[in-house]
Image (cartoon, rainbow, N blue to C red; front, side):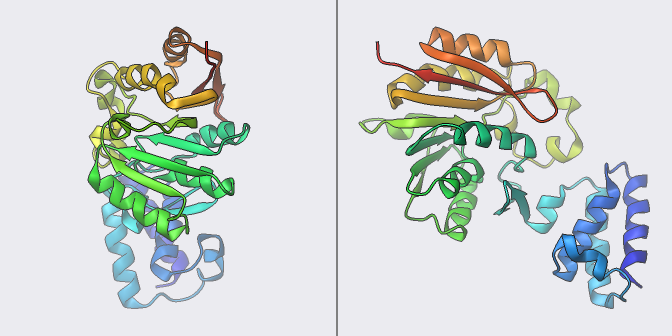
Length: 281
C-alpha cells in the first residue's frame, strides 16, 4: 500500500478513537517508521511501503488509538529546535515551556539550577544556547535522570551539566556554591484537576511530575522559599505555572524578598511563567 493510503487510513482510524489532530500524528508515525524527516514525508507518500514497515506502522497506530503519546511511541520530542529522548519516566517537553526558555535567555546567567529537571530539556537547552554556562539538574526520580544523562551526552554537554538525585534543594546541603538562575517546571496540577487531563497526560506521563496530590502549589512554596539561600545577589528565578496560579506564586515571591516579580504569558496568552529577582538586604 502506498504511503498516502496508509496515512489516510490511519487518520480515519485515530479520528474514530478520539485522537486530536490525527492527520499530524499519522504523518509523524509514518515518517518515524520510514526513517525520513517528517518535513520530507510528502516526497515518499506516493511510493509503496514495504510489508514489514506497513506492519510496524499499523502497530504504532493501534497504540496511538489507545492514546499512548506519540513521543512515547517514537522515543523523541523536539524542543526549542533540538531533539530530546523521551520515555514514560519523564514529562513530554511542551511548546509552552519554551516561554520559560525565552524569558531566561532575555537576561544574563552563568550558573543554572534546574529543580525537577526530568528529561533535562530546560537546563540543557539553556546551556546549549549560552556558551560557557554550566548547570545542575535535580530530580527525585533516578529513572528520569537516566534520560537526562542520555540527553546531556547526546548534545555534547557532559562537561557542563551535572545531575543529582534528590528533592528540590536537598542535594545542595552543605554546598556553598550559589547560582545566578534557578528554573523549574514543577508538578502544578491540583489533585481535583487530574481527572480533566487528556488520557495522553493522565494515563501515560509520570504522576510524580504532574501533581502534588494537593492544591498544585506545594512545590512552589518550597522552591520559592528556598531560592534566596541559593541565589547570588541579583540572581533570578523562573518557574512555569498553570494558567490560574500567577497571582499565588507572585505573592510567594514577594513574601520571600523577590523584586521585579512578573507573570509572563505564553503564545496563547495564558499565564505561563513567574519571574523574580533577588537582592541582598
